[in-house]
Length: 102
Image 1 (cartoon, helix red, strand yellow):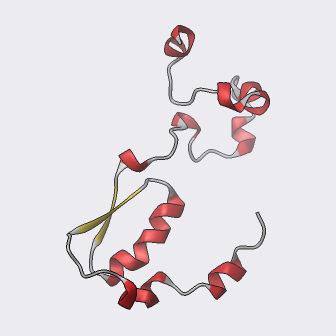
Image 2 (image 1 turned 60 degrees about the vertical axis):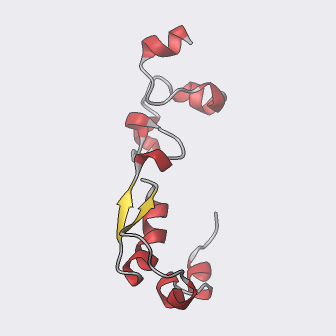
């Protein structure tokens, strides 16, 4: 992916751009459960005095019990070969019986 520190140095911090934000009209800012989304929304939400609230409906993809685990750990899972060879065939967070029925 490259070095992201250069991008963070060049881009203005969201909290520094408060003048560009719309007038406060709510009580919270909704965000995806993904860490990158929570980190992105935190500064502007704080600048507006709003709470950043995680809303699971904004999740991009449910990886179930795989979420947050290291690749080293995941390599031990029986589904790992499927994920490596045919990623679109993998079903995360879906019980085995439901995968078979599909």
